[in-house]
Amino acid sequence: GAPLEGVAVLDVGCGTGALAVAACGRGALVTGTDVSSSMVECTAARAEAAQLPISARVADGRSLPLEYSGSFGLALSNFGSIFVQPASESVEEMLRCVRPGGVVGLTAWGGHHETEAFQLIPTLARNLFGDPAPAVTPAVGPPLPPPVPPAVTPAVTPAVTPAAIPT
Image: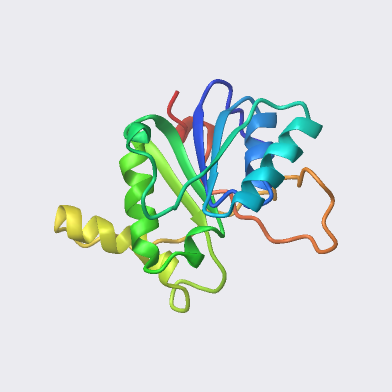
C-alpha cells in the first residue's frame, strides 16, 4: 500500500476502525470519529489490540470539532458519509478539516448515478468554483489488504497515489 508516514489522517465515520488501522499501520497519524460511542469504543479496542496509536472520539460527521479545521493531509470516509443526511454536509466538513492541498476521499455503495455521495465532490467543486467539474472516474489499482480477513472480500479502488499525498 501507499506509505503514509507522518500524514495526519481523519477517518470520518470510523465504525469498527478498519480504515484507521490500515492507515496507521502504514505510518499515518490517525484520528477516527463516529457518531456512535459503541463504534468509537470498537475502534479504540481494535487499535489497542494492534498496538497502534489511533485517537478515536465521538463526533458527528456533519459537525466535526472546530479544532480540526485545516489539520489533516487526508480526510477519508469508508462508507461513513453515505449514512449522513444530507451526505453533502459530511463532505463539506471533511473539506474544512483538510489543509490546503489536502485530499478528501470516500467510498460509497452503487455507481455515481445511484449514490448521492458520488455526486458530492463534483457538485461542491461546481458550487465553489463555478466551473463544470470533470466527470469523476475512479482510479483502478490493486485492493488494499484488510487488517482482518473478511468473510467476503470487498472491491477496493484506491484513488490516492503516494505522489498525491500531502506531507
